[in-house]
Image 1 (cartoon, rainbow, N blue to C red):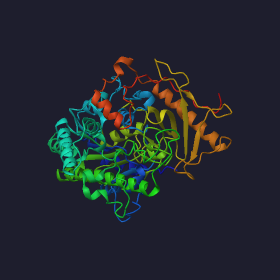
Image 2: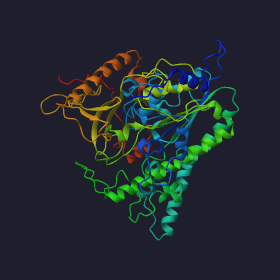
Image 3: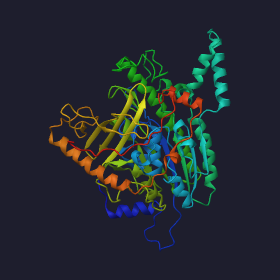
Image 4: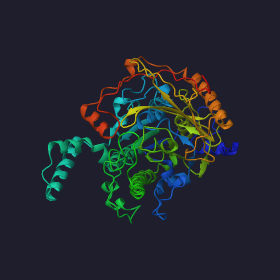
Length: 547
């Protein structure tokens, strides 16, 4: 059951966040600044504030700075991403719209010109907005730069890449290996997003931005996107000590290189049989933990500078993760292939000035469409009517609706994978969808059916099955009740979304990626070497127990 807080706490909260309850009309104080941090591929259950303890090093903290932030703020225990990959999740974060409504379902689309972004909303309210990102799916060609006075990449530059390749060649020759072939050099360049460490580079720019914004007379938003927890899991490249920090006794040979494509990890043909032994798999998770710890350090540096600049009492700090990564929890690895808990339960921590938020936990379901309205309420910035969600701060009016997630994907090795998921405070419903007859003009999906021709749903009771491993049988009353609750929320969401304008298809298409970018995305497992077809999503069918 969701915790509910009284009116006194709500008054204290808003007073601490710049929404002064007793101010006369027209004398509202300046809204608070917003530091919004997104961490790519971070599972909530690998964060100390969410109860994680490193299995081989239980006395070490994996995320001490995030944990400290949670202690002085709010931890949202049931926050669900809009999807299980980066691009549409961040569009939902920036627009307050779910994936079927914003329409950015693959790399062929960009943010609809008629859909305002959080940065555009804040800029119109007098904010200065800057952003630094480090992953390929936050490129400006998808529209993420809208509303920002500066939108900078922390990804490796061509000059840095040339230097890295040359250093690698020299190390190889010095070790007695032959000069690498042109094909090997090309492969290394294509894999840059897998092995590059972006956190140092991102922080250099972020610290410069903080220094500049500190002198501003206007409120500001600084958005930071950390990519380093994304596979490959190579923490030793960021800091050699981290290679064994969370698994010092490991005696095996697995080093985390080419994790997603390694045939030592799994077969690449159905049924994608797992090959990696359990001990090696646990070591891979320890390497993943090392990368998370590295990013936590980078965030600690930012928060320390924020305090030294005297900005802590004027700044709301929010940390989110866009999705998680799977380690054979449901038979596979990576992300962008399903919507179970390990991929869609997101980190959401929020700390405001002073102590009114003070280590609270919100247990009611929160969706990515709720995050922007919640941030605006916390800062005292003007409210925004576009988002499909609402303010979920403690003391705010609670919503009884569930959280939706969606996936419309066709990436190797899984092929077409289409799902809609819904979660309330207790139950999860995942319905698989299929495209029976591919059409050029739109992606039209229908429910997958059980053998008795009824629509298929996978229903889980998270009270007894938190990892979503044991589906409730269709004949069970809880199954029917959960699907019906999903249907009610689906119809309400569809009615909400009907008010959102949609531009012509030509205005929603992203610029085509360069050939080098397509090659890099293929190395990440996101493309088959082809540009996306950019078919808009047709309206989804209503969830029903029978058709």
